[in-house]
Amino acid sequence: MEKRLVQLADLVGGQLYGAPDTVVRDANPPQVSEPDHITLIVDLENHKHAIRAAAVVTPEYVETCSTPQLVVAEPHTAFAEIVSTFRPPRRESLPGVGMDSSVSVANSAKVHPTATVCEDVRIGERTLIMPGVVLMPGCVVGDDCVLHPNVTLYENTMIRDRVRIHAGSVLGAHGFGYKQVDGRHVLSSQLGYVEIESDVDIGAGVTIDRGTYGATKIGEGTKIDNQVMIAHNCRIGRYNLICSQVGIAGSCTTGDYVILAGQVGLKDHIHLGDHTIVGAKAGVMDDCEGGQVYLGAPAMVQRDQMQIFALQRKLPDMRRELKTLRKQVAELSRSLDRQDTDEDRRAA
Image 1 (cartoon, rainbow, N blue to C red):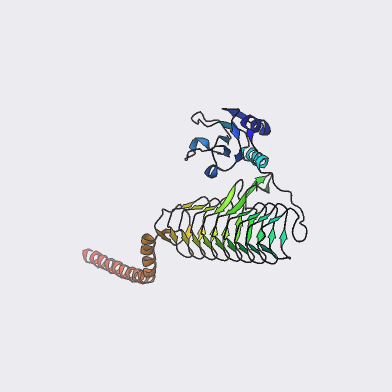
Image 2 (image 1 turned 30 degrees about the vertical axis):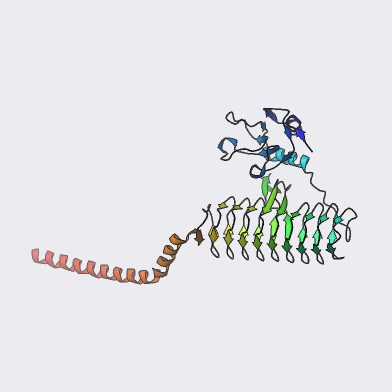
């Protein structure tokens, strides 16, 4: 599908600045936009990265930006409507039992009869779909994959080749994104999906939320342990190791060969560079440069955090020394007071 920019402006009732006949073929967030996409940038004037998209949706016109701009009062609402034009959301409906007639299954794939496979699903060669698996409409599962019992893939989830997903994991559920309208929490747009690249292993009880407009993506060769939570819009790099009970908040990104030890927590919208290692139970609040080890909460470079840990271990001794010094100061003060009193008496 393709649309001219002027058609999208008419669709959302926005003011168009620049090439009305520009052809747009998709809508995606800035970090994954292509030259024929339209994207959303709420703060265009302070946007730090180059704009690769053909056009931007923005709340106000910026003269210094050469990219065609579609200016609207409510950019998120308008962009959601544009995304829905290119990727219409699938209507929620009760699936039938077993496999829908529209499903494409490779001859060498095996699907257990208790699995639920909805319309427009594609399953590749030699893939195994175990008991109780649910594949919602539009899912794609590549070659040589194994989906263990009770795995659930929400609509449009994309699984590449040689991916293994263990029991009870859920990919593509709605992200935890709400906005307040008239004092109520209203779910924000949930028009994205999950994309898992090749050779990824996902443990049991893992949840990976769909993106708001585009993909939540797990990079090639990454291994994810049991009970990990990865929120909406995250983009995990290649060959990461993510250990048990890690929680990654929305819109985080990681480089390649990143290691997150058990129970690490990441604040939203932060980036971890290549070869970053984060120690167990660390709380990451800021971007981390690559090639270093981070410890503690808030997480710091290992060298600095170890100095803090060393001082903390000395605190009991330092407290005892402080109490002794206070006693000594008090005794010295009383002694000086007695000397002053004796001198006053002699003077009188």
